[in-house]
Image 1 (cartoon, rainbow, N blue to C red):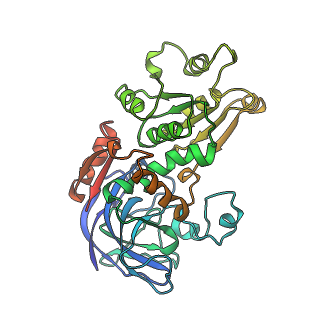
Image 2: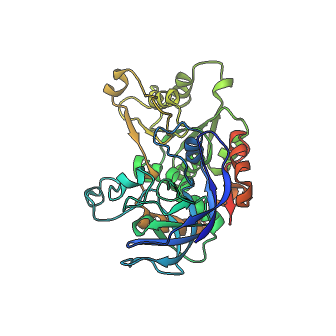
Image 3: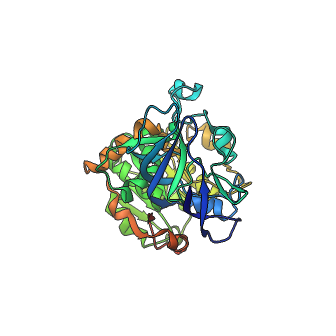
Length: 375
């Protein structure tokens, strides 16, 4: 079938709007009509060429919502007409990682997913005779896509596509890092580095679990009101404090009962290795935990003095907020529909697929929290 797509033909170039051929689902796969897709910093990370695993030409996009229009042979968990969210982190429930219950990083299709193809080693997308790569197993920058059954989460039918598509990455990544990865405790002192689409969801996750002090760090003062809207208690612009950031944050978290200072939990949501170090060193000695969510560029490495770790601080990483997609994503959709979390204010711009490159411009200009394409 012919579908509309925004194709990244080469790194660093705008996406090309064109018709592409999409083959139907094979065994264990489903054909999904996308109704909406968010534009995430990870899409830009790959489009820009900074992603060491980036493949071209490719149909980007991994934050979508839509309807199953066809199920391939052997598919039993979803059916035609079901509303679903694609999962770039699948959940097969059978691989050693899924069975371990220690991680959400399912390995069932990781190898082929990283190669930009479906589990059988082939692509469903093409232009003429040229193969197009799938992206993160999702490719939601097309109005139809094919996904493995284990990479779709069935959701309730009354949830609006243009809002819950954001749960396919940003919302789950941020809130999940708080609840699943860090397991933040009530009353905790926390610092969030970067108040973009991920950072704001970390903040509302911290509010949800009852954190006591929620400090937001960003060089864009316009993000102060955004952070406060979702539960931030203090805002710090590193360019305006007149001193080094780490000692400033340590002092800010001191109290009469705790003269040492330092955060119980910190979250790096930018992908800046210098901030990753600052996030760790802003933690409280003895028990502070720092969670890395942001993805750094090719070849970059994190560093700190071993003393920082020997004295009890912990570095953790978080992918997709530690969420098990098919199990947890429907629950987060329920939280949104029940008013426990907010999404609507973060969808700052909506547009047709023809304007998708404008979404990347808005991202670069710092004018959007999340742009959504509505098909």
